[in-house]
Image (cartoon, rainbow over all chains, first blue to last red; front, side):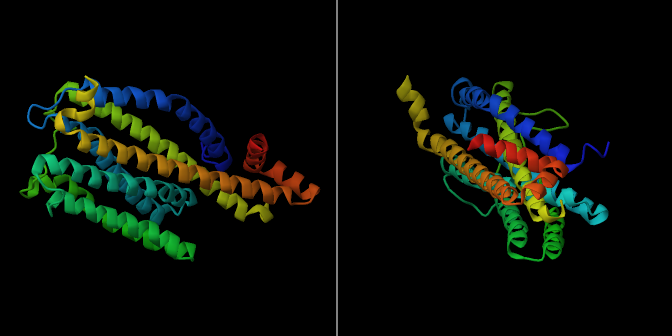
Length: 235
Length: 77
């Protein structure tokens, strides 16, 4: 079982996975974009501006999921002190930051035709902006602090503290009066989005998840090489 | 029809803008990540190649990663 977790084996599987994702990625992007921009219907109220949802919502989901993953792994790192966890969180963080920023930017672009403003200090948007700051804090501590152990400790604390923000983002639309609409897709209970829009949304989400996996694997591979390079004298 | 598709009933600038920003950002992150990975692979392979032949043999025998990086690097050059 633990043989699978060996860095050499992981490295071997990373190569295979990168090759596989690269081989199917562009076809899936074309299919997802066709559904998002051509086949899905315009909204009865928002018209074609609703298509921004196909990049905005998956970006926000990925931003939230990445930070939750980093926080949970940071807690695990405090308990088990596994070096692999550090590599994983370090590889996830830039992806999460980019998608959080994309959720903010595309949300702002969607806000102009829908609400008549690019920005509002609304609970959902502000808490999302705070999440971006937590990402920046997490990444910059790892880049700026030269003592690796200290950097990991501080970045783990940032991730765990920032984790408090995740339920705030999720429930901000229920707890406060906000411009942002409540969730249309629910894991428990009936979703209020029509299947003709849900399908392209899930397709775009899947494509962006594949993209994240590709970037994560490349970053993880880079981190493994960096460690091996550092330890070359011990080999 | 193409005109309609491009204008998105007046929302073209917003819709195309949002998609363009997303794809440009994704492209840039991919490019940066790929370049960093290749740079590390190249540096690692270079470091192995600079070792004495006996030492190089030991490193390749003891590290699957070193041998994989070396072989993939030699394929690209």
